Length: 236
Ligand code: FPP
Image (cartoon, rainbow, N blue to C red; front, side, top):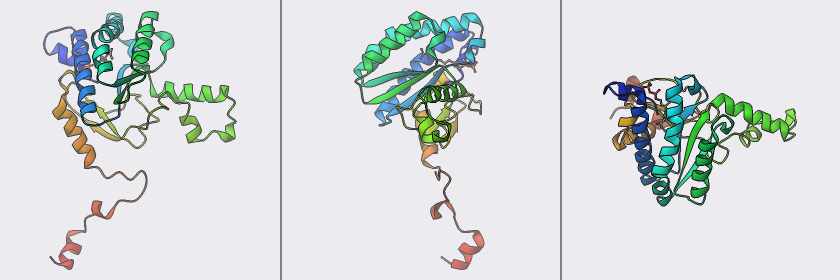
């Protein structure tokens, strides 16, 4: 959900204002995904590296968790959204941890769409914590394969993502779901996150639908049109 800061600065407002509008864009996007039958939406709200931001921005984002949960939880719960938090909860305050626990408990029974909020999350952190858990569980080195490690990843409850969207014009993954995006289709949008709307979501889905997904296999014949010479030799 990139571009909140720029969105606000372009309007002469403090960056935090962009994050606030970012929460509204998030709620809109959850609803739009649910309406389209998407079962899992995972958003990157705070990375392991975001602690490097100015302290007032960090504390603003932490406070925004509390505001967002109190403002939107009952609405999302009523719409069938299950909320899960992924990330290292150890470093966040008791208040933030309690808000996340409350959001998860209040929506645990919902099945329409699962919204995973990556918070104090990093793809590298996830791989390391999965290895630590596997070792602690007594998995022998020779028995450790991809399927086994996947069971210990923070998002083991969800399928790997099909579509990865990054807003805000940057063209990189920035430590998001590194393990899980191995075969995701990547879509980069110039739209700043607070402006992200249904038309942008549909454009990303349309781009995804046009991709030839092979998962390491061969291209389908439909995806390999004949050369102009062969087409001409074959005739109309
Ligand atoms: C990146 O934009 C955005 C973030 C680091 C925060 C994203 C958070 C939200 C949208 C709020 C969600 C909050 C909750 C409680 C779920 P940026 O600030 O790096 O923007 P810039 O690239 O324009 O500076």
